[in-house]
Image 1 (cartoon, rainbow, N blue to C red):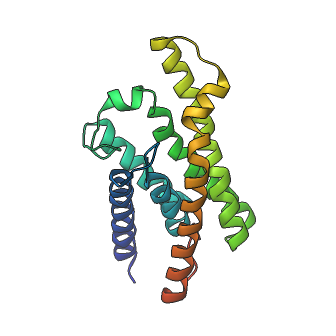
Image 2: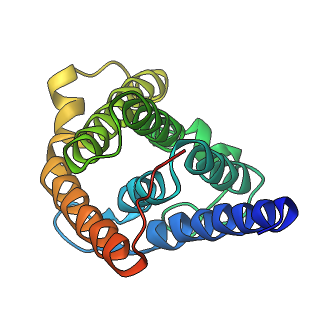
Length: 186
């Protein structure tokens, strides 16, 4: 494969996964507290594309949303979404892919490392997003206790996110068996 053709394939993969993240953000699972498949799209991207390409795909997704393309949950976009209470979680997706990249680069791409990188990546996203939420919420509604904020923003999503990690790992393992190649090499 020529160098130009390889770069073209790389750009196509990045674009396809930026779109995958958008599609996952539009899929809402109706429960008492609805959740999307957005984080699954992020960890799938990190697990399949590897750190550098996954981080670029997430950055493209965020930039598309920032300029108003309705790629975020609820078919919305714009800087106002990023500046709002949930904007920190969206920006935290970059932290997720960066953590996955760092862990897989330092520890390899074995299954336990992949799972641990996904879990830690989600924790980083929770931490950044929750801090952002607390600051923005306090500016508009007044200060609220940490446990209350965690009850709104983290606790209800732990089990669904663990399920998404399990499904993502199954998808990645299946794709690796079908294609005969290991992902997350970069």
